[in-house]
Image 1 (tube, rainbow, N blue to C red):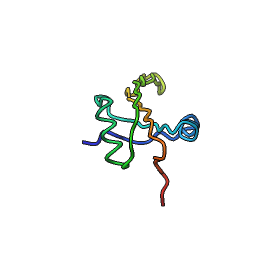
Image 2: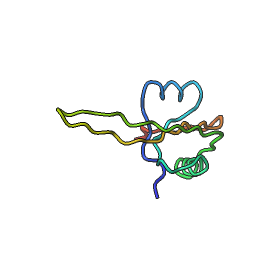
Image 3: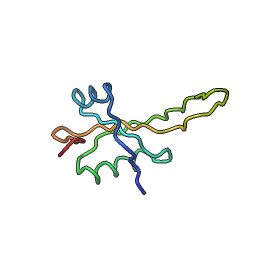
Image 4: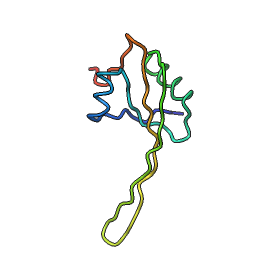
Length: 91
């Protein structure tokens, strides 16, 4: 089971990464902090200090007269120990 879905690459996430060594991921909604910590440590071979999570509620969207809703998703902000980093764009 894949707990981490994708990294979130935004301006705010880039600032967190540069200044505080924090990385932002989209994770499964039913994953808890311990699951996320173990997944990041095993996938990227880094030491995780802290994990903060939040549920992002889906927006209501319209297409003409039809109305729908985007899915809710969970965001995790992972703080790494000093000296550890993750390179998403390694070639």
